[in-house]
Length: 307
Image (tube, rainbow, N blue to C red; front, side):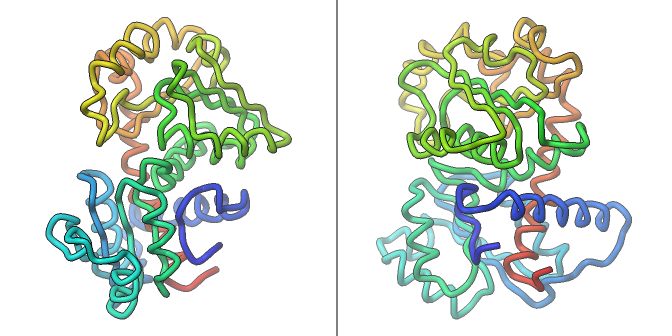
């Protein structure tokens, strides 16, 4: 693997598979009470410029379980929030800590942080990419379906960071990927350009959710308005409402036994109905749990002994 985890576009299929295999072992160790303090004495600096529940808890708990320590840095309370250049923050934290996780808005900020840091940098979320979440998604799908290659993954909703990372991760793992979103809300052009280069797996960008969901093995969705887009709520409800929703009618065209994933938090009655959410709650909360195990794998591979 590379020194950092900034986006799935940077990883090979072999990198992703290695992370998932280590994540499976991390989960086994945790469930069976096996000591796995591979990061004993190491510290992860966690920079949060966006609010978080799952990212903060999973990284903090994960570092504790690996024998290390996680340090929370709020963007509002640290010098980075007062205008300190990102390159200076990178160089200072590199002298104190063994790794940095950042959850922020711009992908360029994460890339710049990694450029100047001499320690690994992990993207906890940007507006462009959500690699840690999608690694957990792929882990969960592989658990339930026993494989990734040859499955069809369908995403319904905004062409946001989740859509971007799912397209890349799914295609790199040999999955067929279809995305349904309204005009004007397409995935990032860089991701669409990547999809054109992939052989051995198919990609489709649709306007009709049922067309995208036809014979899908996995249906995934996300909120219509992500953090920082709250001012667009009414506009987005008009664009997505009544069409781009995971409901019983949509599930009826998917493959029998199709699973549902949602990165959470979920707005029941908007991007997904309460009925479908509850019917697949076990899968969705397994997905949430797997954030812990997948991120522990990433931290171990980047900050600990590399296998």
